[in-house]
Amino acid sequence: HTPQYKLNVAIPLTEVSSRPQQAAPAKRRTTLGDLFRQWATLSRRYMGVLARDKFNLFILFAQAPIIALLTYLVVDAKGQRDFPYFIMALVALWFGTSVAAREVIRERAVYNRERMVNLGLLPYIGSKLFVLLLIVSFQCILLFGTLKLLDLTKLMDLPGRFGGLTLLFVMILTGMVGIALGLFISAVVRTSEMATSLVPLILIPQILFSGLVGVPVGIAKVAGVVMPATWSFDEMKRLSGLDVLRAKDESAEPASKNEGRGLYKQIEHENDKNIQDAQQRISAYRSDAQNKSRDFERNMDQYQKDLMKGESPKKPTAPEPGPAPEVSGAKKVPDDLSNFVDFLHPWGGHWTNLGVLLAMLFGLLGATGIALRSQDIG
Image 1 (spheres, helix red, strand yellow):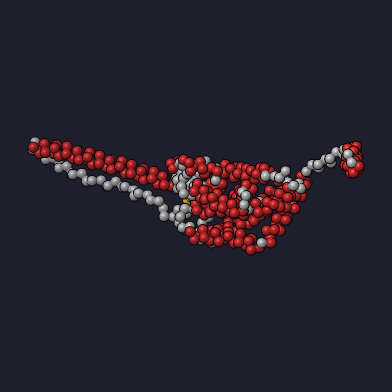
Image 2 (cartoon, helix red, strand yellow):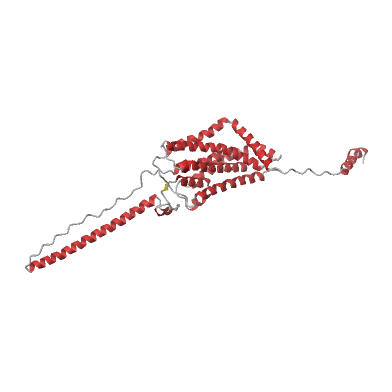
């Protein structure tokens, strides 16, 4: 080897190899305090970003009262109450999904850089959920408040327990599920445009399979199980305390009265009973008239025989017809159905509906975390 090689390569390598190796510093374990500080920092930063776009916030908040007023224009004052409750369920889901569907993908580059310097998944997802929940909750309050104002002014009936506050709670819970669904979409797509395109494809099945168009049966019933709007819509109808038009005889949940029959089948049942009773009264009336007629014929025969014997019998009096049997008129479906909803889901229930919504919420949040974790660099 040349002198230059010994001076510049061999000797430095010998010095390096002779030095004792130092152990790498132990990585400090992340504590709950660290996670909370990350969450607080991310939440403040995220709120600042959203607050800068005041016009977008105005659009988000203006949607709710406009939708409520449009609902009032569509709903018949004497029609069944399903549509307002469906709008509350679907729109709450739409609020959450639409506002969250692009929130991860549009800052993917920033997220990747911060993940490489110890950004935690829980604080990141938690900050998104918290800040977006503030927005969606206010949207739900505006929608519910406008509908409730229409109810208080007697313009549109909207019954609900505890002044309807239970309906608002279900709306906010549904909005949270929508946020979780939107975050999951944003975590798995590659572009913001793709996320925007997926939102209608997810919301349209909610309209078709959640029970707005009738009692779900067959495949539609099974498909509705995975639709958040199905359980939210059913819970709102239950919280209304209204009677149902269709029940056990139409593959829906049995009603709480009339042996489980809904209004339609109850009216049909009462009309059938009235017809049966009328037939029995007419049959009894006919039988009584026939008996009286036979008695009169026998009396007349005896009267004629007595006359032939030279006696002076009293002539029998012809029987007079009794009062005609009363036949009740057919009962009809009332014109005012504002105290009814169409049906209650056969698989639903207060605890079932809330449990399914909570399971969807945590399941979607977990799926979002898994999707983000699988995309980590390095």
